[in-house]
Every structure is written in structure tokens, then in C-alpha cells.
Length: 469
Image (tube, rainbow, N blue to C red; front, side):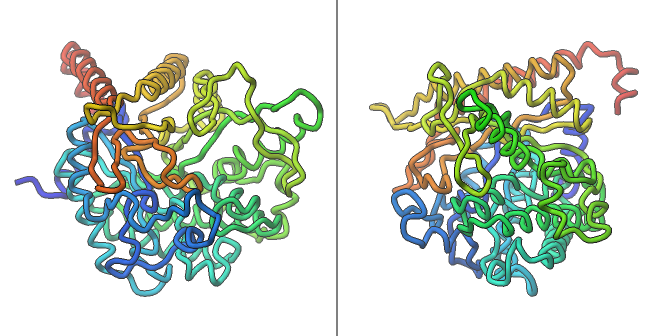
């Protein structure tokens, strides 16, 4: 019988960059796990934020979410039936370290053991993201991302995760969308912890970057043959209306959204428009710590932004797209060409392999009279965006994988459960899972691509195959 470790070695051979393109799906712990007060899990900032009146639509919380903590085996079976190559999920920092540091919580660690082993048994490669927005509340109580000491706490957490799962997991991301949780959480006050303060925002940006570099080093020390990166949300920032005010606002917003993290992490300096604001928090050696070598660039992309001037601390906010631009149910513009251009721009700038770690669309999906979900709008969106990705690849972009957001309908932050992003419909009253039409479409795409890959490989001379192995 194949052990978990030998299974992992087989997966690495199958999914090395020379052996083909990865098709996957992504989730995050707070959005699907539930079990908020089970087996020793501590509060996160999002648990506290959800309990504050008026913060989340309809007063929704992550207390139960998709109950993935108890139903992970069913969810892995859905992935297996879909034919996924890989699955990106995040670890709940307060589940494994309830106060963010100190003694680890064995029941929490054991949950992810079970999940990883189930994925490997289903021949699905696990990708672990260390942080998807759920900071332990105990760390926020002592400053959170505003406290420089968090870089050390995060490195210790990364080392714990690497030591525990690194015999079976080789792909790790440090952060998911740091631009979003810093700007929304510390700049605009729209997300946990709900702060709107310029100094808090700039400290958080710098300390997240320091934590990224510290975690890269910790993972490389803890995990043999590790493959590490970070997942960034990059979207073109257009002007909502013509005119100098909106043009200046779009340029300003783009620096915080697109450059505040990839730029220092890859080039060891902050973009000029941000450098002065960060300078008070810089110490000698910081930039070298931040710019640790990575193996890939994780991209999340849904749409371009249309930006307008505003009176907030950034002087910029989201505006409406032109009337002729189609939008999703959550109001995001549908512009596949922006996705293609973003991939090509990333390739030119960073020159590392790209994995699309999130792409998808919200929809107000409902069960039809047959108990099925015919989400044609999602299929049209995914087809248009994967076509755009293929155009970028044909033009030279080094894209090596595509992960749909999301596997399941889930808790969608400030929107609560009002927006559905999943390939799988979740009846939150019963926790019943129902694959949507888009899940079948995605499964067919994966099967067709895999068949084409096998067909091409069958015509490659044996000596060429040996040279690539």
C-alpha cells in the first residue's frame, strides 16, 4: 500500500513544471470550515468582527459556514469526482495556535493531517496558504499587523506548519491577497479589524512584508524540496470618469493595490509613491529580509477596477464601470482581456512561473425544479477567462496552473452568504452539497486537457521524454 509520503513524492513527479498544467480549486479556512469553538480553536479577528452589529450583511458569521471541518471527506470526494489536480486551502492560525504563539493545539493540527491525507489518497496535490485573513484575536490585542514583533510570531507559525506537513505537502503560500486585508482592514475599515488610519495601514503593509520574508526562510528550513510563493490580487486600475482627479486617484490606488507587496518582495524596494510613507518603519536589513527568493507568483484576478477620487485617507475608492461593461451579481466588471494583459504584464515584470490561484464569479444561484443548479453565467465567465489565459500563454506568459474560486459556496466576508462563488452549491440550512452545471463543465475541461496531454505524450520519442525527466 502506498504511504502518504510516497504518494506525495509521486504527486511531485506528476506535477513538476515539466509534466503539465495544474487544474485546481481554492478555498479559505474561515469561509468554509465552521467549527468556530470546537477542539480548542481560538477566536480570530473575523469572529470578533462578525459579532459587531452592522459589519456583515444579514448578521451572518463564520460559526458554521460550510461545516467543512466535519465534512471534509465529502468535499474531497467532490474534488476527486471533478478530476482536480490540486487544491489550495488555508490553515486557520487560531485553530493550530489559539493565541497565535506558544503551545500548539494538537486537535487543530490533527484536522489538517486528516485533510492532507484524504487529498493525497484521492491523488489531489495539497497547496497550503498560511494566512487568509483570520489573524488570531489574541495577537490583534497586542497590535496585530501593526506590531513589528509579528514577523517573528508568523515565522514560528510557518515553521510549525512546515514541520508538521512538509513530509507530505511541498507547495506553500505565505499570504493571500495582502493588499486587500491591509487596505480594507487598516485603511478603509471595511474588513476586520475595522481600522481606518493611515499610520496603521503603512505599518501593517511593512510588517506583512517582513513576515512574508521571515516565513519564506522558515519554510525553506523546515521543508525539504519546498516550493514557495505568495498570492497577490492584481487588477488594472482604470479611471471611473475622465479628468485629472480620477486619473491621480487611479494611479494612487494602483500603487497600494498592485505594487505594495510584489514590488518589495521581488525587487527589494518599495515603489517610489509609497516609499516615503513606509520609511518611518524601515530598519537596516529589512528589504533584504523581505525580498527572499520565491519559486512562483500566485495571481488572484477577477476584473479591472474603475477608480474615482474620494475624501478617504487614500483619496481614492471604487467607482462604477462604463454602462456597456457587463457585471457579475456582486457588481464586478467582466473584462477577460484585462486578465490576459495582467498575465502578460506579470510575466514581463517578474519572470517567475505564474499560478492563477483564484478566478471565478459570484452568482445568485438557485435550485431549479429538478433540484439542480444551471449556472450558465458562470460557465460563460470561466470559458471567457480561461480562453484569455490561453491567449496569454500563447503569447509567451509562463502560466502553469489555474484554480477556480471557489470549490464551494461559502461565507463571502462582508457579503455574508448572499453571494455564491462555488462550483458546488451548498444548502446552508442542511449542508447538502450539489455540484452545479459549472462543476460538470470544469470537469470536462480538465478531462479534455488531460486527454490531449496524454495524446501528445504518446507521440513524443522516448529519448525526449527521458531528457525531460
